[in-house]
Image (tube, rainbow, N blue to C red; front, side, top):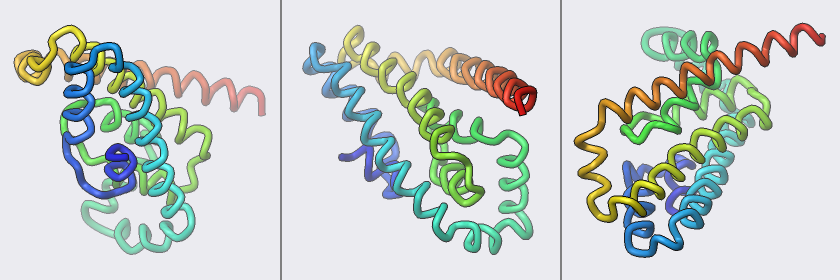
Length: 177
């Protein structure tokens, strides 16, 4: 429920991660079920925000992309597409998720591609957190604090791999068209 609310736009910075770590540390046998529930909640919440943006977000977005930061964010999304959704979704570092999700909806990214990216990113993030909490228990947050550079490098590596994969898929789709 918390993951759905957070992904739908109600701020709960770090709340889902902390809850998942707590559940996984206290009940290691439930860790991966808790991760699956967090993924499902995130998909539901992200879908709500994405759907709202698909209905009327382009008009709202046009108001903000005409100049300044909005224009730069729009250009960034146009260039990198769903990688702008993947990186904050996979990263345990607090990064804004609502703007890229809203842009994806307003710019009419396909539902399938959007849900695939969110699913992949959240699965990596939440299953990794559940596994770490099983292994390190209540020391998981301390572990992440001490190894934040490694976590960041892993997230960046995954983002780069995703960019490469998306480019390969795009070339294949264009070749078949």
